[in-house]
Image (tube, rainbow, N blue to C red; front, side, top):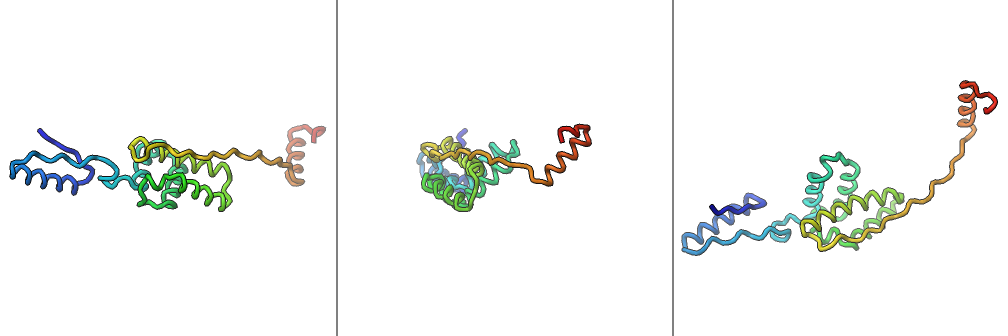
Length: 168
């Protein structure tokens, strides 16, 4: 038995009509359209995000990762083809946007992680030739923090309560 698989019902019905017409004319059954991003229209950023969410993040409950990826996809445009949405120029522009907003290095790295997962999936499905290079930021050294007078009073009170009056 000859069976093809299709991404949408309308694509299957269109192929079925073509196949029936070809058989009536005595011609061979036409091949189904190639399953590729350009033919099926599934190469949009929104579809890529949905695939990554269903394959990777749903079972991990990675809400913040998914949120960061969703914000990136909405920023570049959900209907944009993945090849354009994950172009290095767009990623760099998004990182510049985050820096202009005052996002920390850690936040930028979290967005990079989400974008990395999207691009990894796009390469796997041949929507990209290679993963774009992402610029990971190194966190700045934490600032020194000292107790204020109110906090010092609480520390001393706790030490006295515990019986360490000499240390207080």
